[in-house]
Length: 68
View 1: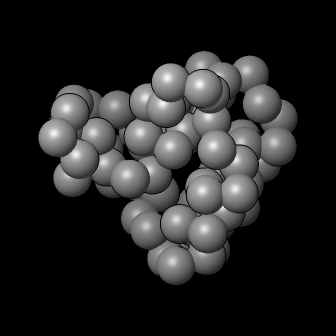
View 2 (view 1 turned 30 degrees about the horizontal axis):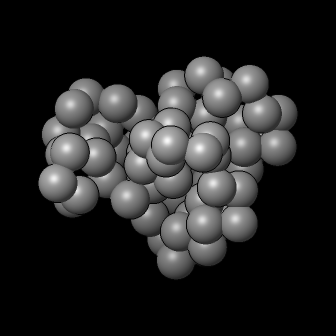
């Protein structure tokens, strides 16, 4: 967990100051991060992806959920 109680995955999706980091999200998911797990703030990765408005991130999350 990061100091703001975000997981690395939720931070990469919705906590970064400059927007989502698509490449970082892909790496984290490829390393088998649990896409079903909320961070300590109660945020779920898929919901963070939806909030970004990025279809690419939502698809990446959906694929990760299917393969987890």
